[in-house]
Amino acid sequence: MQLTAKLYQLLPLQTGSGKNGPWKKQDIIVETDGNFPKKVCISIWGDKIDSALLKPGTMLTIDFDVESREYNGRWYTDVKAWKVQVAGGSNADVYHDLPPADGSDEPLPF
Image (tube, rainbow, N blue to C red; front, side):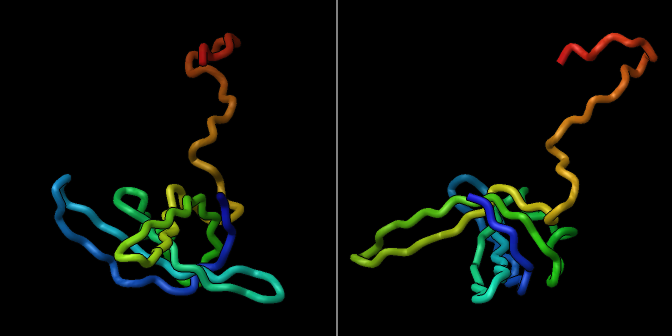
């Protein structure tokens, strides 16, 4: 799923150590646009945390998964981001057609 929303609040960075080693988690609160804005808490884990992007007031495009789990008869839902970028910004994952470095007109092999 994908959501474009304004970063409303940055919650404190959480860190710890588990059976797979150290971990870190950044929870953010974003606010949707529209007639009835909603606030949503989204978790960003590990190396997906980019402090340079996470400034309150910034419009973000967030790709995320929603997962629920049961514990002692109650259900808990997590919204976990797997990609965060500035809305309308350039996408670093897109490759552009560039001329070959050697100046030839041959297309790149990939």
